[in-house]
Image (spheres, helix red, strand yellow):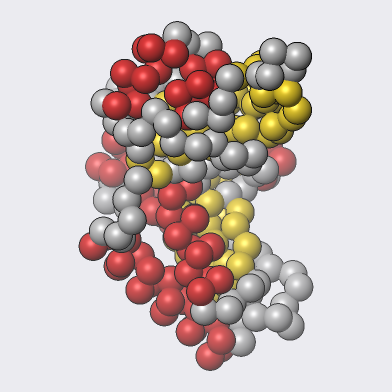
Length: 252
């Protein structure tokens, strides 16, 4: 895994530090753009490093992958994340994830202004920064060749990500062992994928099959979704370790 932050990560940290100073100066909540899971971890560490403990993440629904961060002064209890959900209503064929994202970029929308794209929802839904919602309601009417009519909807209409809970045993807490069972794949195949860089552990790239896995860790495999290690239990009679995971389906 990387130990030194990249230039992109340094710029993110600088922006986060600016947001913290602004929250303290104005004595009011300051919100980030939508952050990837890796960026969320960086934001949490940045807040902790300066002693700013009131930091909250929210992406519009419980299992959201992309989330906004909020730096909140101690006096504030009620916060209002500037998040809007748009439903892409159509009588025709639904657009898929790449088409939706491509159309947004074509309109000049930056990726950090958009949260999760729920292409598999019925109808598809888009979580976005409230500030760009009026523009999208007027101009975001087509993705690829598929036309639709966007409308603003309630956060409660956003479906939770589907997952399958699975319990199994492994000889050790090595990444290749846990990931192979979690994704129902042969260990030799999983080891190859890890060495090729197709997997992340807690949103950090790793090419080490022997990396250690802990309870709460998130393992993502490109094209196969992600697995969350929800519980590490005791040992079986054959001294194998019981593990329970939640495997989330791939967002299409």
